[in-house]
Length: 424
Image (tube, helix red, strand yellow):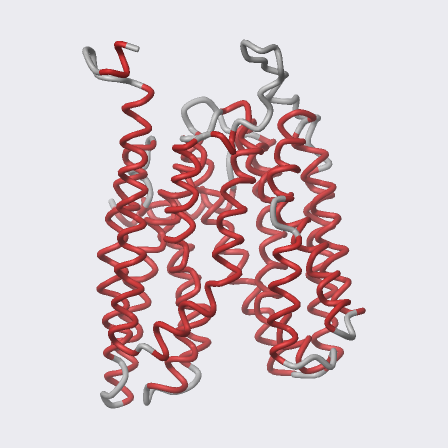
């Protein structure tokens, strides 16, 4: 029986959703994420090697530029809710293309800040407006399935982009880096072109007024349950930076494993996540099951990171085994947390304002992303084994907080008869 199930799943993954509009969104997503995978691997190296900036300037420029774009996702997401998501997503993708190509013009700190700010505005806008688009295109009762599929193809795209970038890194010349950056910019344009084939998507939100007669526009920033979820989910997202930032440095500086394990761990993690994304989150059928997976991911991260910490000291082959096992467990935990958090970010949002809500969630993740490298490297590298454990506890507590927030949200929507909520 298993011999027939796996090919069927593979064909389903390659073919995509049956709905044409969902299929176009899927195609745009995988094209876009291939470019993202390239940029993640070569962008910083290009700036240091060929733009004349030192590492400190690159760090400051990218951080300040990202912060300059903070909040743009909320504004652009609200625009998508009120005007229709299709045109807004296309415009944001074109802005990202400009930001990506602009890297080739960077020659000092200020130009880097300007370019990264443009890219940050485009990225925040794409993320939030795309959230509004997903909300419109998801079939009734099947939103979790579409979101799970999009997460899977996202990881496939990132893996392809990472492998492509590895070729450029091996060649290690300025023309090779320029080609990768130009290709990244082109992927944004291609994704926009694919989405242009979609019909206009009607706005999901019309003016709503309260007792005062004034429009209640910024509903997402007044939703205490969603704001609490944003804080908890953003803190839990620190886990993303372990494989990207902490583990490669740990492998090179603290273990006897081959240095190539630093690249292999990131690639292996991307492949495992892409393979597990759909089957491992198949149980998600609503916010309660999503919250359960987020909570369960915490203990798995603790196990994974203890194994990674233990890789310092033993012989090379034992270190490699521990690292591989750690990456495997980490990847499963990541799938559970990412899938559950993604579902909660939609389930706890008001359907007519998905763009605005996704902008709020994106702003929280952007804030954490700005400080995450410093946090994970300080704890894991400087803190040693205890630092790994502390980080795992923080992420686990944040995951449990997400589950508690979902439970309180559910009670507020469906109060128990006789409870104070029902009486009021």
